[in-house]
Length: 255
Image (cartoon, rainbow, N blue to C red; front, side, top):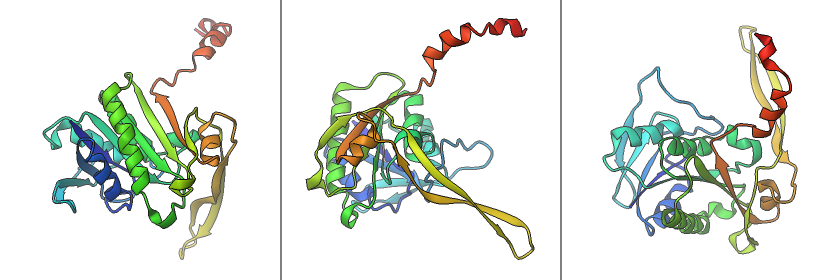
């Protein structure tokens, strides 16, 4: 068995060593991460410039890889031949920050897991609300490893992944595990406008951290109540109920 471990925070993430150590107790684990932070990068696919993937020695003596590409590129590079063995599971994270609700469309952590599923390999994305006390990801890594073991035992349906969010609370304050749906995220973005020394406008997207509506049964509700949220996600984004509504629009008359 082989687990590929990636993330979107890069090879220096404080969550990476405890995740590697914990997952090694389940199966051989190979690190393949970006060489820099790709937070909120969405799902880029690098096609018009070269990609690098450099092997280096991890702290336990094993071989690891870091790439100039985005998180989905790391997964694709590994699966297309940079490494010889084909992973049985891909684990992405732990991300330093929650990925709940609509965040899944922005998240590089989730994008890496999606890329894995596109290639036919089951995947789990892990994220944690911040701040984690003393940056201690050991207990979270052990939970991630136990869940990874369950996935290896039971498998996941095609085109499906798990999105896991940990609460920020100390691990001894975690109240349990909840199977959830995506909740409505509320973004508070603001446009910050500045002028450079030549008088040209430039911009930042600023504002305040996102909030959310903690409807019962959602990932946002679970994390706010110190529960570990596990949300199954499907790659099928079809709004199936809308198909019947659109039939009533008589769209064939548009021709």
